Image (cartoon, rainbow, N blue to C red; front, top):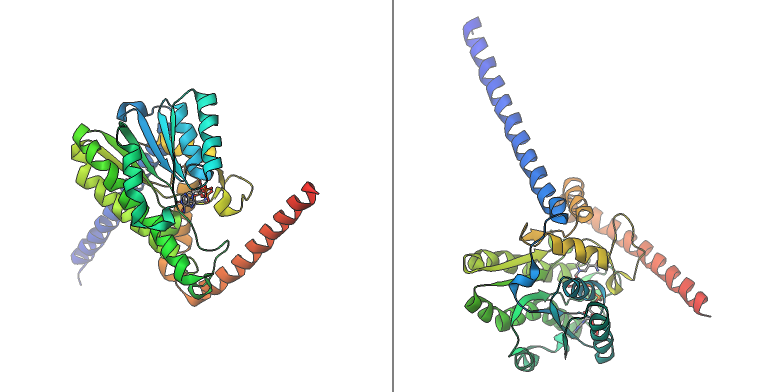
Length: 328
Ligand SMILES: NC(=O)c1ccc[n+]([C@@H]2O[C@H](COP(=O)([O-])OP(=O)(O)OC[C@H]3O[C@@H](n4cnc5c(N)ncnc54)[C@H](OP(=O)(O)O)[C@@H]3O)[C@@H](O)[C@H]2O)c1
């Protein structure tokens, strides 16, 4: 090769390199800007949630994330329909919301594990209400800790319950409420997925699969109905301190339910798929970089997950022991 063709090759390589660097710089700048909008700007300018309609319906509203959403929505001026299993807790939360925020409440007692037959009664209870917001929050896991599929306690019944609670509730509540939102050309549906649905998670196999259902359903529904005035937002949190996580103490990475609900509601209108808060968004990025899909599905990773499950169980047992000692 003569020196002229050599310099041509070098020039082409420099151009390719330059464009690649520019492409990645633009890509990452765009991602940083989007993250900044969703998790920082959203704390200063929020959508007026009252504009969607008078009532917000929250499933699984008597503890954890659902209760925190119910409180936060009431604080932002909506009347709340609380849907959960335990009547005493429903009355207690409804009273707290009425006393603290001066909003109206309705309660609906139901058990979402029971399947199709519960929905006509829910439809009847919601018939005359102008529902602006539906929060499909209810969800359950099948074990206190991470377990292999065959170690799920009472598997025939438990797996059906998980599917009814995590999947059927989302589709049926949407079927009940979306038509009137479409008529009014206004409405917000928030569906609670999980970081566990972002990738297949060994030792959380069924839970993880139910959550990817929620994610796909929400994202597809959002694009079908956004031109008709409906927003469907999918929220995929990491760990939040609730019953489901054995009330592990909140920290920089593990959010309290009230902080989480407040930050996540701020992101409405900014993103249709969100981790809910900046701490969880950063953990999502870290996890996908350091633990890519192929690694998470490897036998090595499953072994590590087993060890992690054991150490988590120990921590939880210690916490339970400590709180039992305090009560004595
Ligand atoms: N906590 C986390 O770290 C985390 C992370 C990612 C995603 N999520 C998702 O966030 C959602 C809420 O989780 P959470 O941690 O707040 O749960 P939680 O603390 O266990 O609260 C669950 C709520 O749902 C109600 N509920 C449970 N089973 C029910 C049933 N069969 N029928 C009717 N109501 C039922 C409970 O009411 P009763 O008390 O009356 O039974 C309670 O109000 C779930 O979809 C979960 O998958 C949670």
